[in-house]
Length: 396
Image (cartoon, rainbow, N blue to C red; front, side, top):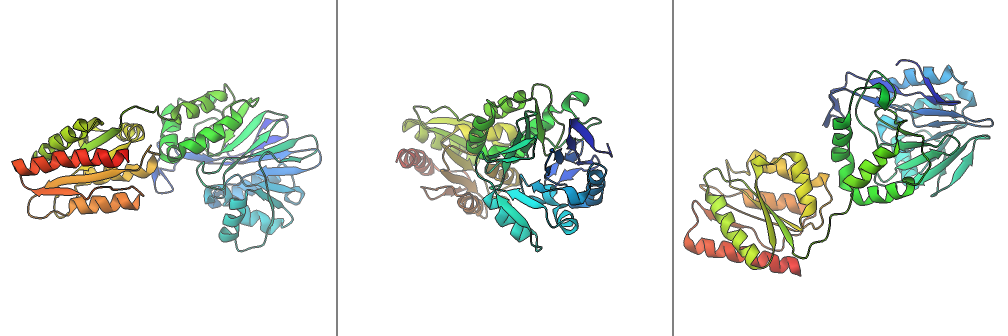
């Protein structure tokens, strides 16, 4: 779709398609590319843009706009989020029409000043603030940390459209503009949530509470198809996926082990006995048997994390680092952890993993425990005590 599309009377999609994209931001694989959705709302008195596009699509974006309205007639641009895939064309737009007023959040204003050297007229919005375009109204709903501190939603009550920024989106570029015009992209929708939104579940719950009772006929996200049939289904999905975990009577400890020669797992059996003796519930997995989604689920369910790792070539093995790479993508109930393991001719892994956990703001109430080769009977007693001491520290 190289041209704009009128999605409602005087409301236009003016975004860009990027079907050949294979990795978004050099971080997230995309099986079907993505879109950079931007919108124009033409009121009887004012004309507003909602977001721009990635810089490489600037000329295409400006061309779409000029076929609808003269650029000199645009009064304001709403920046729901300042990340470059949303603001890439903003600098060029303001060069052409420096009178355009930029509406954004307070953090958004701060970020824009750092992203753009050129002066710009800004208006910092407050929660629930509205601006009249004549026969149309834009209402602003703050949604910080979905997934940046600057994020907000824009609601068009006359058409019951929510411009939801990154929320309720997906990296998916299909043949049509709307969800009901393309193939099933539920995998991409959930993957987008897990990799981008999931660390901010508390903020998601706050944002969902602001929109779940709004009259909605369409959700227009910043990426992926527009949701015009049962748009609230996407809101309900976010609500379910971001639900707070139930509180349990017993402390729950997640223990993840890797043990090529069985020695670390031998230690883990005694550590687990100590945990259970002290009254904790224990969920134990071999690291290699877990996929990413299960790891995230278990991390959010548990109160504390134990990692059991050997040392291989002066380091923790790659599967352990894979698990550690997932920790920043969740919002665990408690950032409390500990590390133990065995080693042969060198034993750096436990210290390295502890360092990583501290970097992720985990509290480590116990010093890591490590033994050489197969643990002795005396070592196993120490392991059991390690588990019991960990629960005592967790209770405090």
